[in-house]
Image 1 (tube, rainbow, N blue to C red):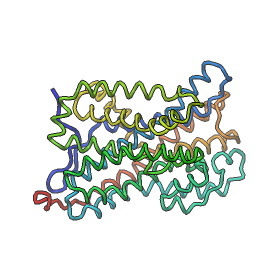
Image 2 (image 1 turned 90 degrees about the vertical axis):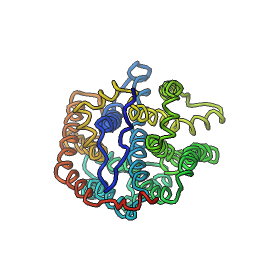
Image 3 (image 1 turned 60 degrees about the vertical axis):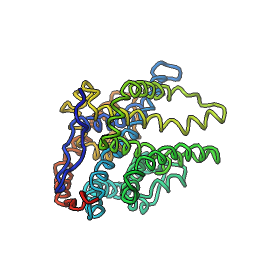
Image 4 (image 1 turned 135 degrees about the vertical axis):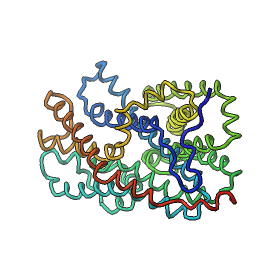
Length: 397
């Protein structure tokens, strides 16, 4: 028997939606994949041709943790906007809450980067600080455009913020688009946006293979993940769509299995392929990953994956999910600073000293994330909840 969909949204009076522990665990898994990639997979010293080298190459696919964040963001933010799209103060409340949630930790990271620049000449700091990028695009969440122009993600201290730029641009534009759509146009618009992203990726690859950063780092080429998450949020709020989905459980299960199989094959794609196959791989890989995570969220919402829901709801994963934003922001700077301070070099995993410093960096990252949560993140989120959506016009709408 299906349980009701999760996070179906606030009801009259601007009440807060119920928090699903499985979604915190989902977020926790996503950030753990990224941390493992950046702490272990990227820096493991292996011998060419050794089994560990092949495993390292395969595990590079763990960057898909970022796509999990995109799909989850689309699901949660899309759900909020769908629930409150008729509120007269939608934009004011939505942007105020987003600012209180996102800006403090982000600008703290930029402040730390500015301070670290004064020690850029110290041994081991070059890995964090080079190549030198101007700071002003980061203040405007426009660094992904700079990265595409330069063909690089910039200094490792703030390299991971490209995904935050995409999400912030999505938060800026999506409420405006959603507010302008009628209920009948909602699903066609979401579907068109999802279909457009792989076309734009293929076009960028066909025009110039050197535009690989444009395929990876711009909102229009990556919004299929965000929009698929929003599509799942629309499905679990629409009675007719829910009825159709319930009748399609077996085909959707097969699609989920097929998407998982295709994602597992991504690291095995050869580097040299015919141009048509290369275009298909470039344009399709992000879409397949997004479909996988969107279906996972749909299954969780429909109550079709109770074991997965229980696994994701365990307390450690929920805790990691709660502090995941700061973990994502600071895990790379903390790793680089620890290696520079204790070993005077860039991160690597070749000796026991390297492993010890990596473990120390991991502990410090989670400690710092917990501290930022307790000191201001949680408080500012609660402050944001004092901004209430005016839902008096909802029934009329």
